[in-house]
Each structure stands twice: as structure tokens, then as C-alpha cells.
Length: 620
Image (cartoon, rainbow, N blue to C red; front, top):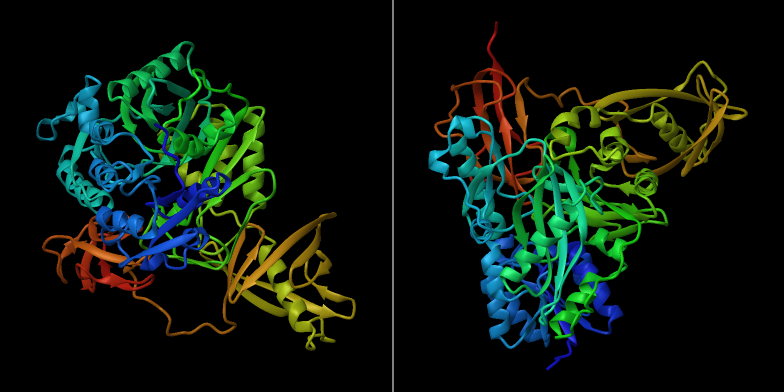
């Protein structure tokens, strides 16, 4: 008997909740959001028809509390729960609790989740077995320590030296427990130059299983995907059909119903099973673009008991997705917080986001701001369209990985389809070299000068230029300009036009336009981010050499055992570990020397720039 869904509660947050709400609205279905205190004003809480507060901020207090979410669904009058991805989406006990409450579960049966949610049990089901962590030998290195529950790169560590294994196991357990409420980890061989390829599946309760094409997700940082595309390019003849067969086999083995993903590592023309994700994936958008489907709408139909057609729709064209993160790739992918002043992309690409202009980016959750997706007839066209859109996008706020994404998309190894999971290991330094526009500071200064000139800025002494200082890509730059009877002037260029929002400079006979946006001392000139500096710097604002500052707001979760002031430390030694945005970040000694100050304490909340420790270098 088909049971129609009228109201859906989404047990998640951010862009996935907003995306599910959009499909529900188009289907005439009412929506209910749940939100933590930190997300009270978040976009997903605002766009839903109804919202229910989950007291607290940390995931363990809120989005990982299945009992509170079921109560919220019943209190709001929902008749179905969609788990989204992450948090409780692969928790069989939560699925059972939803069903036991008389609600419709928009996902696979709890038994299927249970069989595949633990990666160790999934491997056993597929006839594979993880390594015994206690018996790993040098010959088996490198290995990957991996969380048995959840995904998204959390709870993963590559181990290349045997003496690092115990530390990696400890850190992975802590991170997995924090992100998923389950600290179980396992060890498997790590293939250095494999490609991460997956198959999207969709199955109904009547025996039909669709393999909806392949996706390549090889470009990853910290084992979390950065750029994904469909179909996976350049697979050897016959391998695609093999991947389809294995994916369908995995689905049928657990009587799967709903949307899911079967992941493989492809190396030397062979496919190695990794895991099955019993949920919707972040990268489902590229599959939707290629197959012309709305997978959330299909999930709803399957949950209502409808049968899928026997054959899936035909694939068309190529789609690529880039994940825009609030992070600094050049500083060990450190997450960034602050106000997102502006986020807009040009027409012709899709933007999925859980943020809107003026929203605060906090420390409690994943730093992904948005997914930007391009679809075109060919892979080359899709790459060009996505890179161009990212280049022209307005992204004003904390530092992001935008430049890295553009350079990655245009890298010859990617455009030729020869990438693998070691892409950023090989190319990160080159891809994160600062490359601010050399004329951006001048354009910013001229825009500022135009605004002030309305209040009287003209001078009759061109020999006395005005000076303006900016911080750009970690360096200070000073630019000089002057006011003349004809307007603003500067050395080496002709100022064609200048106002507070746009500046046009003629450089070597070519006119270049710069779009300007200002938020206090923050200035954005195209893709270049600047900070206006005071004319006379504070002489007291200096730090002792070797000072270690908190790179982001977070919690001190660990201080190296036995560490105390006066201790000898070596360069690269881990001293303090911070947890922010569901990831642990190691703060290491910058030089070999003596720890002369230690301010960090376990459990302490820190803000960016807070002094954690000082290491005095040993004199040679």
C-alpha cells in the first residue's frame, strides 16, 4: 500500500537541508528543520516551513541526538524523516527509532544500513577483511587508518612509518567519536596512485536496482573530496560494466532500498572495493545533472512505495562539481571563520549552499560553504565553464579555497584525466603559491580616494603623493597616487575611471576593469582579498620569535604528554591539538629549541591569534 508523504523533517543542516527543502516545496510537501543554538539564524532554519530547536551547539548535543530529533518530528506533525548526509544518516538505531515512532524513513532499511554502515562489516560482506592493526609490518606500509562509521574524511590518517601507527590510531578514534559518536577504526592498505571512483545506485522495494553511472572523486584533501565529476573519465574498456555489476551485487546483498553509493579505488585497471555509503552523497548533484534526475524526489517516491521504471534514463554530457570551503589550503587546510559578506556565482552554473549574505561561519560544523556545479556537452566544456564561473564569482568573507579550485581545474594533469588521489600531495605547494593581482592594491586605494575626494581631496602638489598600505597574501604593500586637476593619477598606469565600486586602469595600452567591494577594513578587488592597514602601525603589536598562535577558533583537545615550560622540543614535533569544524589540527614546533612558554590547556576555548606557546630556537 502506497503511503503519501505530506510533511518531511530533515535531520540535518546546511546546504543538504536547503536542497531537500527545495525539492519538497516543488513536490507540495511541507518541511520541518531542526537547528542547534549555533544555527538559530542559519539559512536552513529560515527557509523551512517549521523549525524546532535542539538546545546546545556541539553535534553530540544536537544533530547526533536521535531521540531529540524523533521528538521534534512528532511535535511538529511530520510524517517522514530524511537524514540528509553525515550525522545520523548511516545510523541504523536512528532509522529504527524513526520507524518505531510510526514515521516514514526516507532511506534504506535499518538492516541494510547496519550491514554496510560499519566499513569493517561491509568488507567482510564483500569477502574482504581489514588488516590487524597489532600485526602491521614495515612491508605493508603505507596503510590507512579509517573510521568504521561515517565518512567525509574524518577519522582517517595515512601512516608511512610504523612508529606513527599508535598515534594515528588514537587521533583517528578521537576524531571519529567526536564526528559520528563511534570511535571504532580499522586499518587497510593505502594505494598511493589510485583513483577514487564510485557508482550511484537507486533501488526500490520491488527488486529494481539502477546503477546511475560513475563518478570520479580523486581530488581530495584530508581524504575528503574537493572536486567530483560524472562520468569518471578514461576508465579502461569493460571496467565500467564491472563496477556496475559490483555495485548492484552490493545492493542486492543487503536488500537495499533508496539512494546509495558504492565506492572503489581503481588502480592498474582493477577495482578495489572500499565501502558502501547508505545515504545520499554530497556529490549526487553531478549524477543528477548527467541523468536529468532529482534524486531527492526519487527518494521520496521510493519511500512512498512507488516502483522505478525497469531502466534508468540515458546519460547526457558531463558534469563537474567543486566544493567551496572556508579554509586556507596553504596553512594545512586550516578552517576559517567570520562573516560571509557576499556569495554569488554567474548564471550558467548551479549553486547549492546553506549560507546567504551576512551569515556567520562558525566553528562547530564542516567548513564547506557551497557546491558549484557545471554541466556541458563535453568534459572540456564543463571544466572551462566551472573554472570561469569560480573566477567571476563574488566570494567576500573569510579565506576560501577558490584559487585552489580554479588552478586544480586548469591543471594539465586534471584536464587530461590523469589525476589520482595523490594529486594534492604532488602539487599543493605550486597550487597555493600566492598570486594576487599586482594592481589590486592600487585599484583599492583609488576607489577609496574617490570616495574621500567628494569631501575635498584635490591637491596642487603632484610631488606630494598620497600613500595607502594593505596586507595582501600575508605581505604588506604600499601604493602611491595623487590628485590632479584631471582626476586621480598613479605611476605607470592611466586611470581611465575610478569610483567606489569600480576602477578602470590602462596598463600597457590595455584597459582593465576592477570591481571593488569594501566591508570595513576588508577590501575585495576581483578575486584578491586585501586588508587596509593603519597609516601608522602600532609599535607594540609585536610577538616574540617562535610564538605559536591559534590559527582558528576552537577547543584545545590535547597537549603533548609531559610537555612543560623548559622542555626541549624538535622542529615538527606536535605540541598542541585543536578541534574545530569537526577536525583535529596539530600545532607543531616551528624550530628545534626550548619551550619557553605554554599557555594552552586541555579543554580551553581559544580564538584566532591567541598565544598558545613560545619556542626559542637553539642557537647553532
